[in-house]
Length: 346
Image 1 (cartoon, rainbow, N blue to C red):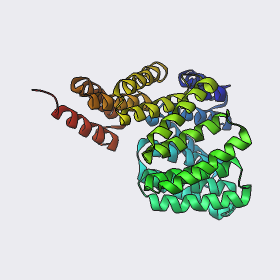
Image 2 (cartoon, one colour; image 1 turned 90 degrees about the horizontal axis):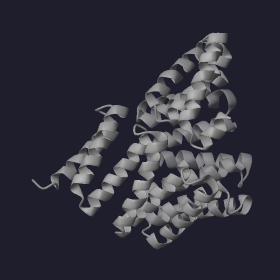
Image 3 (tube, rainbow, N blue to C red; image 1 turned 90 degrees about the vertical axis):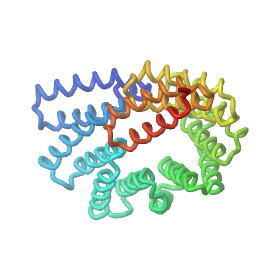
């Protein structure tokens, strides 16, 4: 039930539901019972999905401590807890902590299960994601290539895990500026998803969006916009107008409008995204704050300096509240606010 609601984007409801379950289990079984610990992990994931990363980190750390004490440092559940905490560190921008913890997980999986075990390969992929976020694109590419080779050999060319590995490597190629490689790989992924799952499957449509992103990076804005329109229409029909994937597609189309100089269309679409994010996720959610920043950028491009400054000021306030004054996101949003303020008339 909770998993289905998560997929529908009903994060608040799921969080409250899991809080109730956790409190019931704690009262009946005690804090260290396996059912209670599992419910703590589920609640921490709910916090993570809501963007309440500090709450998620605190609870995941408790879960990890109990798993180590009750099950041992190398138990499967302990390693899963370490992985989940590393993912939260990554979201918070605590990249050194994330790398250190995920490296420990990979080392233990490799030693206990072997390099060819699926859990080991997943851990390699997680570490590659952290390298990517750190800007260590060469290391990310090398590890993602290993993951792809292992998935292809162990699972086959058309297995979902193999296709995900191809998509992640294509993203790294795009970021590195290897756009021809990125396009070729992502096109192969889309072709396989279309053939295996059909054109109307959400996974196929999301991979269309990835290919549209590559077209955008190549400056093929006409092709990008055409594909983004298709993606938005399909996701709206398949998942609904307020689903997170639909909102991401709206944001990307708004960015294309902005790049083309169609600023009125960009503003209208980005404003819709912000309104939906605010209503569904709340003002404090990181995705809402990203939408605010995107709209501030559009106002800036339109020469609406006052509107841009007001909105960017809110972004700075939210980043300070969510991440703290010294976080990179906060520093970048403050720098952007300063750039906007320079253009304001005296």
